[in-house]
Length: 102
Image (spheres, rainbow, N blue to C red):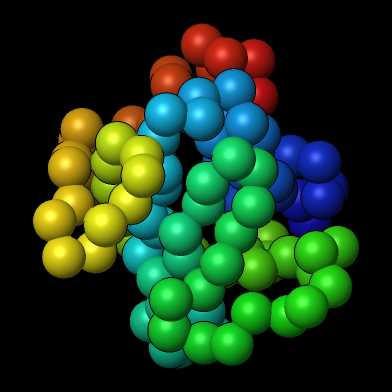
């Protein structure tokens, strides 16, 4: 079991707190359904499903399987996204997280 502090969603939120010039778009498999989550300045929001009003409820639960992560420049404009890097795997994201001590 992954503790909540080191859960992938929490780590990605902390990453964006330390890199406010970036938005992460995370594609996940959540209980057999695909979801896409935007993470910006420490907050997550699903772009597919409704997001709980309570910020303590994780948008990316520990059992979510991360398919890919896209790094974009903020502000995020879905009609004209400015990609920094696309299709990053969870394993490839690790050095970026570790560099910021998250």
